[in-house]
Length: 64
Image 1 (cartoon, helix red, strand yellow):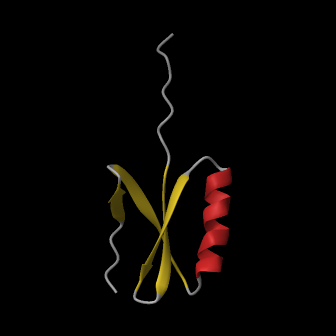
Image 2 (spheres, rainbow, N blue to C red; image 1 turned 45 degrees about the horizontal axis):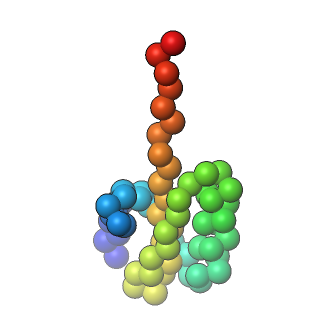
């Protein structure tokens, strides 16, 4: 299986966490952890495995 490291969803770039899951429930559990940490998450099914992709906006800092 050749898995893309990044995918675009609605114009936003999501990065794969590098793991595959055998069930959507296992992937969902990981997604919930990422979401609690402030990430947007997406799940994809590929070749019978579930993949988790995430993204987070970079924090902007003022130059004070």
